[in-house]
Amino acid sequence: MSLLSLVQRRLIIVTGKGGVGKSTLTAAMGRALAAQGKRVMISEIVPFHDTPSQLAAALGGKRPTEEPVLYGDNLWVALLTPTMGHLRFLQDSLPIRMLADAAMRSQGLRKFLSAAPGFSDMGVMYRMLDLLRREHPSGGPMFEVCIVDSPATGHALALAQIPEFLTRVIPGGPIFRAAAEGVRILTDPSICGTVIVTLPETLPVTEALELEKGLAKHKLTVSAIVVNRVPRDPFSADERLALAEVLKNGDSTVFGARELKRIERAEAALALLKEKHPDHAVVLSEVDGTGAEASKNLVALL
Ligand SMILES: Nc1ncnc2c1ncn2[C@@H]1O[C@H](COP(=O)(O)OP(=O)(O)O)[C@@H](O)[C@H]1O
Ligand SMILES: [Mg+2]
Figure 1 (tube, protein in one colour):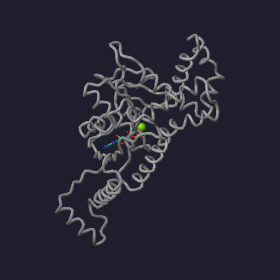
Figure 2 (cartoon, protein in one colour):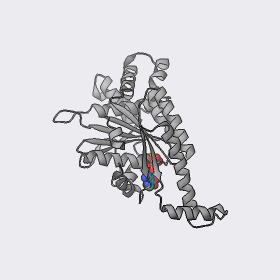
Figure 3 (spheres, rainbow, N blue to C red):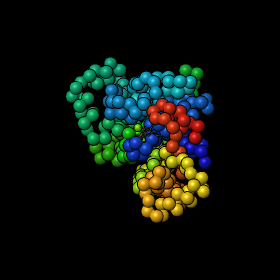
C-alpha cells in the first residue's frame, strides 16, 4: 500500500532515529498532500526558535518561524517550540492576555518552564493542539493535515507519557486538563497516526519494531513503518550471478562488491520486516540529490 493512503489522518507524527530521513520525508509528504489540494502544515519540533532547522534544509527556502508561513500552494511550515506552547497556554488560561505576555517575560518563570521535566513536551503538545484547532476564515480547520517532524526516537513517546507524569505532579487543574486533551487526540486512531522511519539494515529495522511496541503500549497508532533509502539494484540477474561467482573466491576488492553486500543486507532487513508487518511496511528507495532536491525526488515514490 502507498504511504499516502496509510497516513490519511489529521495529525501525522514522523519519528525514528537521527539521519534516517524524517525531515526529508516530512517535506515530501507535505508537498504530496498539498498537491492533492489539502491545506497542509508541516512542522518541526525544536527546543528554541533559533535552533537550526533540518526541515528548512529538506524543504529549501527560507527558515521557518514559530508562526506558520505559507511555503507554497496549500503548504505551510512552522517550528514547534516549548516556549510558544507555554505562552499560548497562559494566554488561553489567564483572564487577561496581557498577563500572559508579562508572565512570559519573567526570566524566573521561563527558566522554570524550560527546566522542569515534562514541561517542554507539554509546551510542544499544547502548541500542536493550538494549531490543529485553528480555523480557516471560510470555516473548517485552517490546517487539514498537520505533519510533525519529531527530533528523536523518544519524543513521540514522551508526548504520550505526559499525563502519567502530570498525575503524579499536578493532578487536576488547567494544565492537567490541557494535557489530558492532548493525549486524547494523540491516542485517537481516527485523528493521529505515527510514521516510524528506519534504514534498510537489520539492526535499525529491529529497533523500529521495538519502537512500534513502545508506541503501541502508550496507545499511539503506528500507521506505517517506512524503510527509507533502499539501494536501487544496478545489477541484472546475470551480472549478479557473475559477481557472486567472483566474490565466492574471496575477492572483496572487486568493483561493486560493497554495493552488492549493501543490497543483500537491505534484502535481509526487508525480509525481517515483511515477516512481521506485511500490511503497513513501506519501502522507499534511494533518490538522487540531497536537501530539497532529495525531498522533491521522494514525492514521486509516495
Ligand atoms: N530516500 C532518500 N534517498 C537519498 N537520500 C536521502 C533519502 N532520504 C533522506 N536522504 C538524505 O539523508 C540525509 C538525512 O536525512 P534527514 O531527512 O535530514 O534525516 P533525519 O531528519 O531523520 O535526521 C539527508 O542528506 C537527506 O538528503
Ligand atoms: Mg530531521
